[in-house]
Length: 370
Ligand SMILES: Cc1cc2nc3c(=O)[nH]c(=O)nc-3n(C[C@H](O)[C@H](O)[C@H](O)COP(=O)(O)O)c2cc1C
Figure 1 (cartoon, rainbow, N blue to C red):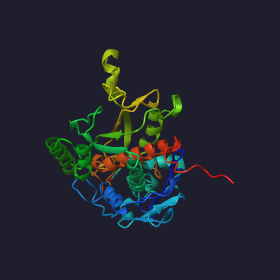
Figure 2: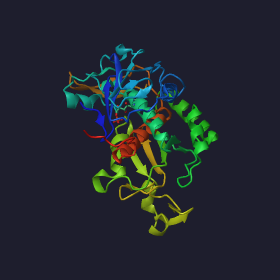
Figure 3: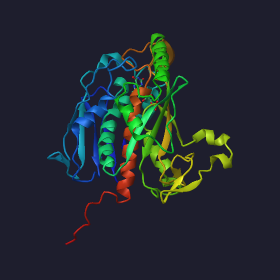
Figure 4: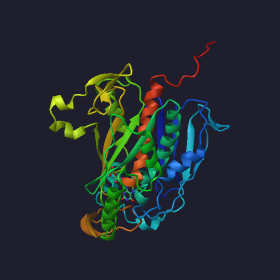
């Protein structure tokens, strides 16, 4: 099993949902950046479980212990290792999952891959809990990016088919979007948010779950970053974001609706604004030919309904090789989407910092040589 990502900045996630702890090693951070640990804690609280009706009742503070790579409050440039201890694991709820895999979860596919030796408790290393250290890494990257004027925001774009107001992809209002982070349910249109919460509650009461879409924006990314074909920005960002458990799709800019547009509508017209090259529209989502064009990078991800539901479902018994009924115990989100919003922001930040570091943006001095 390997859960590593990145080129210049590399992250490596470790741990299991019901083991002693989970964490991340971040390699390639620039030195000298003062971390605001309280801001990181606040960012992680947006993802932490047990804080809202649409979240699992598992209570985890997700307090993060930084073991290395930080001295006097500043990054040293050495690998930064962070550990989050699991404090509210109820492993007894998951005793039989190796034999009776949960439909829609990774239990069966994990058994195919690891011959049943994988830790099955709460999904083990496949658990959505692994997004906690990823969120930590993203919160840290985000702070470093802010120094270069890059900012990132995300919101619940849709749940159970109920839409929020979309982001303005050409001229986003930084203040308005920054305010989303303080909302327990991050939407622009609170009335739409209330209808979404109702749909989640309805699913919870019928022991079911619902999915949705998250929209994320990265503003301030300089033009000209990336490479064509396989190392394009879309490919690189997708390889990270599609690694988030339960994410099943991604689109950039106008995405799949581009397929129903004409060229005369879809083409983003370049214009000169204050002596700078901009585009009148942003159907490309800030990326053309795999390379940033200076417009905000806008992407949306599809999040499937939570696989673990309370209803009785059919599965198979692997040791008996017959079909059986399954009632899942344990505590589960009726909808993953709201908690995955900061995870999407974190992924965007890790992606953007890797890109910026690769392009040499954080070099504070030239190597002096010998
Ligand atoms: C923040 C977050 C929370 C999640 N919570 C749950 C959960 O409570 N129950 C569950 O069955 N799946 C949960 N998942 C999703 C599973 O981890 C995921 O569906 C599973 O690992 C299979 O991976 P896949 O859906 O990408 O194929 C969560 C995912 C995320 C990102």
